[in-house]
Length: 331
Image (cartoon, rainbow, N blue to C red):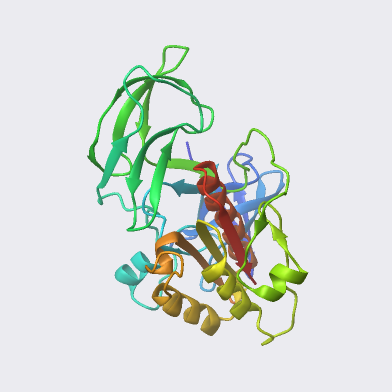
């Protein structure tokens, strides 16, 4: 059951609210009459310090606050590829359709389209024994990218039924029976907390280079698959241009491009021109194997931070499918 509280005071994007009972750190909350999304970052008894993901101007003490009782989560499934999200996984394309170019505060939409049907092709049969991470089927999400549907973490058992056909992301494509005898629906969509790393069996040694396509980097500053690198520099020195070139030419299967603090005009340029880039590997549009997470510098710090966690969660999900993923964070 959701906890109710009221706003005590407001300082920029930080809101202090008093609840009926003590809430939990990390819970997602709806702040004010318009229901701005926020996250509890500190507790003092029944007082909760909340970082809002949107601008709080116009709110006042006494307005209601609702603790949802769950953390910020990412929806993972068909519909991610080629999309542009904000830091809390609201589709910018859908927000444009609903609210126009000037996005109203408090707009809530599902990250993945609940009405679109995807053609699911099973890769296991009735009676198959499966564990977490096993591929049970595929969906041709774009002309280039094949989305592999996985058994969620912490789930294993025997496939009781599974069938090919057209399904939405929240419709069951099959049924699984666990060793405890519990029946679990198999869906194309998973939900995962963005601040919790997805599990893995072992970390592989860094032995394979990531070919960035930039000869200076590949020759003098090579980057390994599974490794990390940074490009420091002042304003206007070419960081964003370099990262866009790496997105285009790197030998990765999937690109996660996170803009978490760029100026608005730079981010507008990215989301306008990125979908028009041609992928030199396939000859198709680069956006067909790219997910963009966009948060500009005038957004609250909490929203920009959330965008990084969201992008990494998306990357770990595609990694679990067996793809090489390049995560590019442009601040």
